[in-house]
Length: 448
Ligand SMILES: Nc1ncnc2c1ncn2[C@@H]1O[C@H](COP(=O)(O)OP(=O)(O)OP(=O)(O)O)[C@@H](O)[C@H]1O
Image (tube, rainbow, N blue to C red; front, side, top):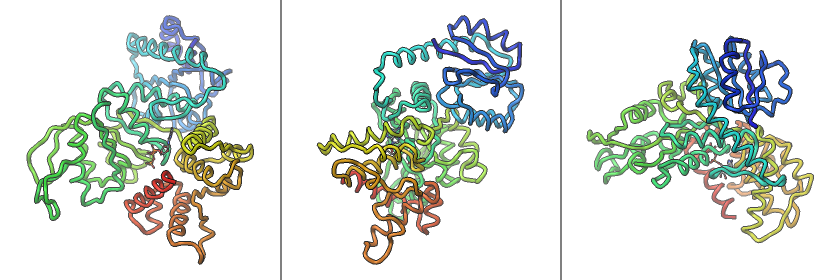
């Protein structure tokens, strides 16, 4: 039976919620403070937190708390603006109810949760113990943070809301966006993916909104932009914080009015596109640092979804490695396996490049290994990650310029914790050039 835990010191809330909770069927427990021992923290499926006040300290405590992952959260507050509660919402908290409480609405929400959680309990029970990774849409992973992500995606897919996906590079933002599209009513319409960082600043406006013939030098014919190409479907704007601010304000206008004009034209066109944006920066920091317009953030952040980094999904790491290996074995008709040491090394590494890095590491190891994948086939995972065949320390006469460049790029990315803008800056190249090079490496690896 799904378990709900209520954290509050407010007796009035306990008294008003208790009858609802018994009515909806939840198993129920209550503590006054989050720190109070919750005997079986992982067994709670839903937590209602109604703090008397909520400070920065509480926010950090909560993030570290064992309940923070794999559990649905509902916040009840007195309605006073509180940036720390807003931050919690950004982490994917399901609902924020403000006092005075609408008990009828809360009952409906809790009933929905109860039905979903009960179904989940039942499907978990009927699965064999040795089950492989769960898959939801295009996303793989059975860990608690992934299950929470699946639930958020399922819910948002049924709506028309714009979505902001927040997560580190390689954590699956594009896969999540494609999954939302596939599960939505727009599934049969186009999905157009645009990497804002990889577009030349001068051309980005015409790429997005299109242009008319003669609008600028080189505009030799009319061109339909991504908003037109994606009409009726979904437009995925990756790395939204790398889009010039002036264009962010144009984008905001389109999101508000559903209208745009091609560059060089004053004919207003209607668009019916759902926007899913993504960033690997924390949006509030990006706003502070001037990478993102606050008004655009609020427009997109009706539904922010945080993708968990792989290191927070420790239960998934080995399973994913086995999955990617099985896939390679299948396509190459081989039967290679990991040694125990290799699996231990994979399990304890922190994977700053997330699933992408894990996948590439496994694919490369599969190529290098004859039969068994041992530590020798894995790049030194206990050192700062280096997913190049050539280590940066090996750059000396005798290796090709291409290999040296790749090694340096990968080492710089690791050094910058996979922040591509910073890495491009250090390398003295544009972010667009960096993307092009990385894409080429991906293609070569996938072809090999
Ligand atoms: N949950 C997942 N299940 C399966 N594969 C995944 C998952 N997450 C990421 N990947 C793999 O990692 C690669 C990168 O994923 P994706 O492009 O969605 O990440 P991203 O967060 O958009 O990265 P970036 O910010 O660098 O654009 C994909 O090729 C995919 O194979």
